[in-house]
Amino acid sequence: MFRIGLLSDTHGLLRPEAKAFLKGSDHIIHAGDIGDPKILEELALTAPVTAVRGNNDKGIWAEMLPVNDFLKVGEIFIYVLHDLTELKIKPVAEGVEIVVTGHSHKPLISEREGVLYVNPGSAGPRRFKLPIAVAEVIVSGRSISARIVVLKDSNKA
Image (cartoon, rainbow, N blue to C red; front, side, top):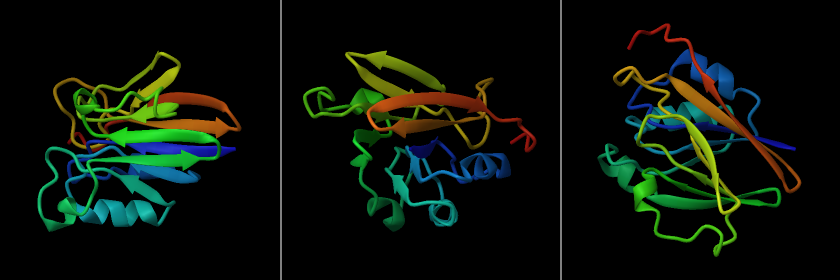
C-alpha cells in the first residue's frame, strides 16, 4: 500500500498543517505554483517529491521543473500537470489511472472514463473564500482511493 500526499498552489507558503498532513506519505506530489524552491526542499525531508512548474513559478529554479510528469506508484500510472486545461494527452490511451492538477485552487475529486482526477486545492495563501486544502491518494495494488482534507486556516494568510 502506498500513500501519496498531494498539494498545490502553495505560492511560497508551506503551512505547518499541510506539513503535518503529509507526514507518513510514501511520496508527495506538488502540482505547481510552488512559489519558493525551499518548499520542495522541505517536502523532500518527508518523502520523495514529484513537482511540476505552475504558471506563477518563475526563475532558474522553476525552469528546471517539468511542466508535466508521469509517475508510477506500485501498479498505477499518475500524470501530473498544473492546469487541467493544458492537458494534451488522452489519459486512458496513455494508461494513466490518476491525473493530478492544481491551478484553480478548488479542491475536487472526479472520475471520467475510468480515470481519477484529483485537484488538492490550494495549500498556500487563502484565495477568495476557497478552502485551504490538501489531498491524499491511497494505492493498494490496482485499488485507488482519494480524499481531500480541508485545513484550519490558523495563519489567516
